[in-house]
Image 1: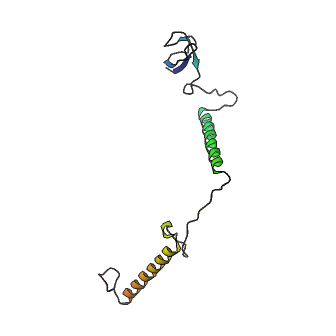
Image 2: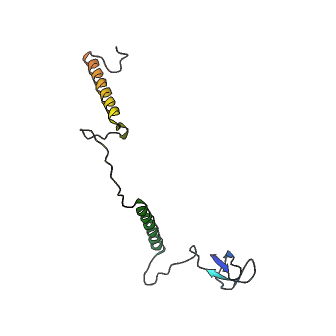
Length: 139
């Protein structure tokens, strides 16, 4: 059985009722006076008619309208500012650098010095015939 919504003309009470068929003269559950049937969005059906519109199409159109409203509000808040595309920095060989590798000039200089010192250390170990992880080396 479908669920119908009603509103009392006298006291304004809104209530729902399961009914096998729609009765226009449903009594109010509070005062007993006549209540009118409301169009519920849950029980409403969309007639095909000349547009031949399905329920999915109607829901999709409503969703698009709501997303457009959200987009309009965001544009209004943003004002005349434009979204900027941020490119991720790459090394010379095309590998992407982690964003954490970025920093101020002093940090970048220290990182560069550390990397070059580490590369020199590894080069000296390989010249001596030592592998990188065979044990502690001399400092």
